[in-house]
Image 1 (cartoon, rainbow, N blue to C red):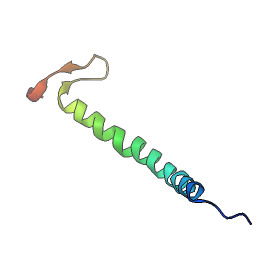
Image 2 (image 1 turned 60 degrees about the vertical axis):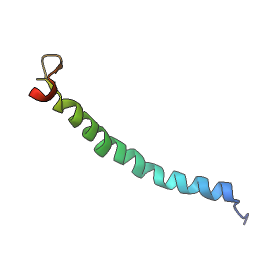
Image 3 (image 1 turned 90 degrees about the horizontal axis):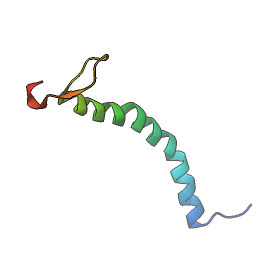
Length: 56
């Protein structure tokens, strides 16, 4: 069997962690950022967002 070099082992590690990072960004990161956007906007689904600032 061929011995893997340092670069190949690092790459394998990143590939193994990639599904978790994608899952985290989709199901945690995006909703968190979108909720901070919604805090400062007045919005119902049928009308466009309007900036409300701290009044919301």
